[in-house]
Image 1 (cartoon, rainbow, N blue to C red):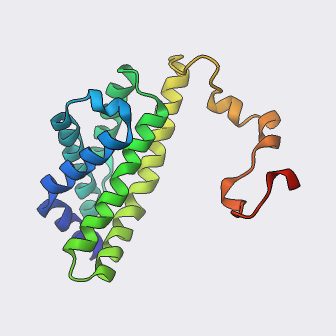
Image 2: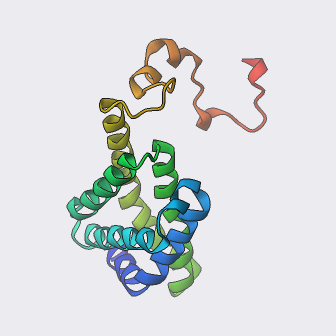
Length: 175
């Protein structure tokens, strides 16, 4: 039932959510300021429509198609993986605030957001991995930037410290 309720809130507040997410994207990712704000909002509406289908029917094809299309346009326009990733992640806090504000209680809003997030995060991860893969295949990575293959190599893996296992009190010099 949470998925259905989340979809209903997204549908009811589609315009407001889209404008707020577009505003967040344009303020967080400088390159998006070159894109017309209404075009960004329209892209967000298309993504929200696909997310609604995902939430109500469990079918991700529409939202994946929209995200892949937007990804292709942004990649061809010179956007980096980082630009795209930050833009995709900008939606999460905005949507969370809408769910909390529009649900019958803050607790209910958080439960709706969790239902939304459980569906959307794995999807976002796959889209970003696609962006990286396509960028590597088409040599659109900036010169000197290591590719995912290089990042996953044994040599670099030795120097990699997982940020989720570092406490704020860890001193890198102690390792």
